[in-house]
Image 1: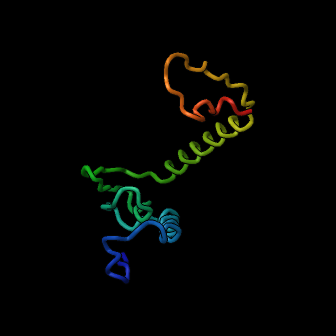
Image 2: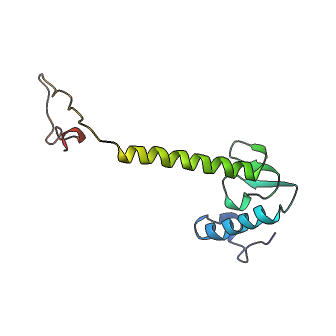
Length: 123
């Protein structure tokens, strides 16, 4: 493991500038093999991806022990991605149809200017 050169980053390292670098390292661990048999890692960080076949993930509520099967996870995530794109495509291609407006309120109430404009009145 290589520590960051700047010691101030040890506890306050953000995800932003390192995401591509960490993803490349995760891909190399996926293709070349694990670094260890068991790893203690933070939850959700790309630095933890494919670190070991058994991960002890640290959460704010405690910890979680996971047995990782990366190729199964990749296959499932591709399936979820394909199903999501299928649903998005169906939503994009369908006719929006007419959305009837609800009846205007009646009675002795105060009205707010512009309150009648809603998404249903757009054409």
